[in-house]
Structure formats: C-alpha cells, structure tokens
Length: 146
Image 1 (cartoon, helix red, strand yellow):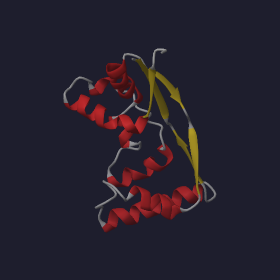
Image 2 (image 1 turned 120 degrees about the vertical axis):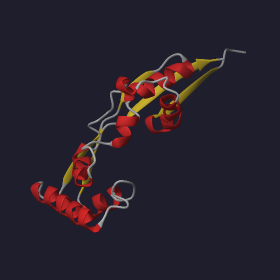
Image 3 (image 1 turned 90 degrees about the vertical axis):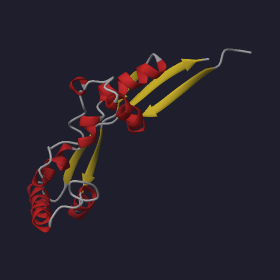
C-alpha cells in the first residue's frame, strides 16, 4: 500500500478561530500582522461616520501573515495563493444593510445612520450609480503526510 498524504485546504476565513486563540495567548504579536487592508476598502471607507477605521476590521485582526503563521505551526508548511476578485454593487441599500448588520453600524444612533446613508448616496453618485469594490482573498494550502 502506498503512503497516504492528507491535503488540507483551508480558506482564510476558516483560520480565524485558531488565530484568535494564538493572539489571545500572545504567540502572535499584533505588530507582526500585515493584513489585507485593501479588502473591500471602497465600502469600509464609508464606515468612518461610525468612527471606524476605513478598512476591513477582520483584515486587521486576521491578516495573511497571521494565517500563514497559524497554518505553519500546525502543519509545518504552507503555500499561500492570493485570489483577487471584485464586487459590482448597484444597490445602495445592499451596502447599508451589510454594514449595519454588525457593530459599529449595528446599534448606531439615528443621526449616524442618516450620515451613513448620505455617505453611501454620495459614493454611488460620484461613481455613476455603481460601486466597484476590490476583494482580497487568499487560499492557504498545507500538506501533512501520514
């Protein structure tokens, strides 16, 4: 019988729980993180009306370096492959609903929500009714042989 190898394909989002544990135990220093801060920046920039930074908050906490380090600690090897994509958003309400479904948009007061709706309307108006949003996604592949 031939040697069996197990391939593990773990998407970026699937590594978040392990990385959160690593961060909590301080085995990964936050200063070491280099997030995919450009991920959907065009819509996250609108959240400054809530006092948020203009980038994907998940990318700050769970950047590519942290994902790679977490995978390497579990499997000893890892290859990362970036898969850029884009969204073409034509409905302002889609942006509003998405970014108010979790904090800080969720729970924001009426004055902030009004300013947020206006920021969204302005963004769509400046871009002829369409938001082209860049996504940054990575695939991490590790192989552990039996």
